[in-house]
Length: 252
Ligand code: NAP
Image (cartoon, rainbow, N blue to C red):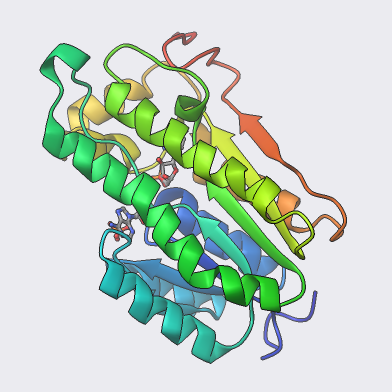
């Protein structure tokens, strides 16, 4: 990798870079010599991070096709895209199936599943043309298992994982690597968003455990993206030592 100040740094797009895992990933990749393009709806936040690490901040709402198209065009104008981290997304609610809230389902499918399809589709030709592209998708252990009250989120993350893993075969023979990162509990704004800003309820998710930090996940992304081009890390699952499954924790 070249120096972080060089204009020839390879471009990596990080979606949902205004907070949590996305913000930490933009910082970690910048430290590794990438030029991060940070996309999110909260522009003030991504601008501050871009200024800090020498990246580019661009408005992005992954649920809106026109926003994704405008974003992708501005990214392409910057140069060849070598990396894409599909990170934007999250969860809403914990209703059981019998009480399923369609608005919550729609929000989760639009951001995690269709958002990932839209951004990937828009940037894939540029990733292929770069001659050495890499797509990393942040799914979740919710994409590998199910848990009570989690159907909307686990269904969306399973779908996101399926679409991501499909790329592995479809891109065989193209110069693009494909890595899925599936974290367990990470302390970010995730629970606050899931519980509509209820801080007390969000804090309970991490009570008595030592959760992963956004930096822990970012370091894993940076590891996968810094392997030599012939090495494809397909899937990495990381959880706090205090977590066995989506539902089972060692709470002290
Ligand atoms: P977070 O702190 O809430 O960050 C979520 C990010 O997604 C924010 O930057 C948000 O930006 C962005 N986002 C949401 N909707 C968006 C949209 N429509 N368009 C563009 N950006 C959007 O949560 P996080 O934990 O870092 O979550 C990042 C990813 O990791 C998510 O896909 C989540 O499902 C996954 N994950 C999280 C955990 C966990 O325990 N925290 C575990 C496994 C997987 P704006 O609101 O500014 O647009």
